[in-house]
Image (cartoon, rainbow, N blue to C red):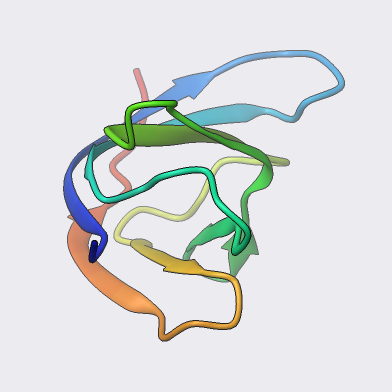
Length: 91
């Protein structure tokens, strides 16, 4: 199944995981042999964990992205998908 992304949520957190939790919602994002990789702008998400149902994943960024930075996703070794979702400033 091909990855389809519908929405993304950015939340500021503090701790060893990073500064920003990124939650991606969609379908076709199963945990399998090829891991899901994502980035926002030039920052790669760390600690990426897929939903068991394939309905999304969560990962962490070390710092806030720049406004307008685009979300990209792929399975490791696969073609990167440029989504139409971008980062906006958090309140």
